[in-house]
Length: 259
Ligand SMILES: [Zn+2]
Image (cartoon, rainbow, N blue to C red; front, side, top):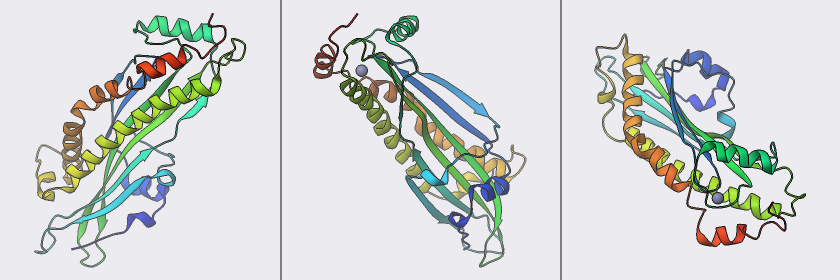
């Protein structure tokens, strides 16, 4: 059984070692006051570089799966990371512009437009070759990263002009962001649990792929995609949670002049 310790490597080292990310999926959601406009897209064969992955890892673990050593049996190690980046508050638009944008979205609004919340979910799988220190056998190391990023709470920049309580409004959109984070963590935990469970053999042996690295990468993505099948749907529901009666009543009194 062989183990290497990737956590001692720098992001640049890993980028170089891995060569490329085979694929990563991304799904973004924009939340208007009471609804959201989810977008789902898949990005293939996109090289990722220069991202500050390792500084912000919430959960990372190194697992070792080894087939009992008969010469150099196929071995797969995992480096798993879940990153939930904090939202930033921005003030790009004024109230009129936000209302126009919200109207254009065609969504049903449950409360007055004071801003919106957006985020992007993505995941990446990178498989690279390494050599086990103990046995000298070649092994594969799969890095899997699930990320909730590009998180922005946009708040109208002219709230003061309309006598609006900025703090109350920011905290409302922060609730939407919190609910988004909650559902992300649930699915990230499920994805990680699926990868940890069972035998590594299921990730090898796809002869339609050009090599073991591609076979393993594709098989891992297939497992993750299965787990994520209902993620976007659950996320849509979660992002409306903060628009409850109590919050709507509060927001209705957020501004002296709501015009
Ligand atoms: Zn809301």
